[in-house]
Image (cartoon, rainbow, N blue to C red; front, top):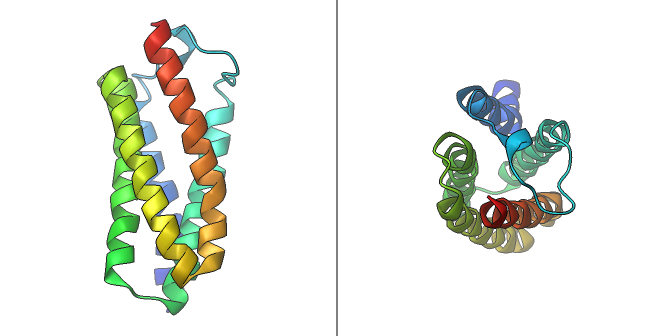
Length: 149
């Protein structure tokens, strides 16, 4: 695999997240919302997502080094798309209830992908654990924001 392809796989999640961040920057209303207990300050989100997107890209880069299962690759891109669209649904469209359903779909896709990674490339599986934990926390926040607003 050439260097350009490696960089593409590594930074695609971060680049996609950056585009979504640009699209939703004027719609973010996190500071004005009633939030559940344990809600982090706004500054935590870009830091956490940068780390998570780099872990996602690294996991995929490691996976692609030795594996080329088209079904696994398809699930990877589906979960990435679900991830990017959640922010638009939650912030731009302000569909808070629907965003709960959406994030649950995202979690299901991530779990399916992690099961495939666990069989095909364990290191990729381990790199996805922080992502799944963050999504579970984000689901808690999403439900809390919906109920409190």
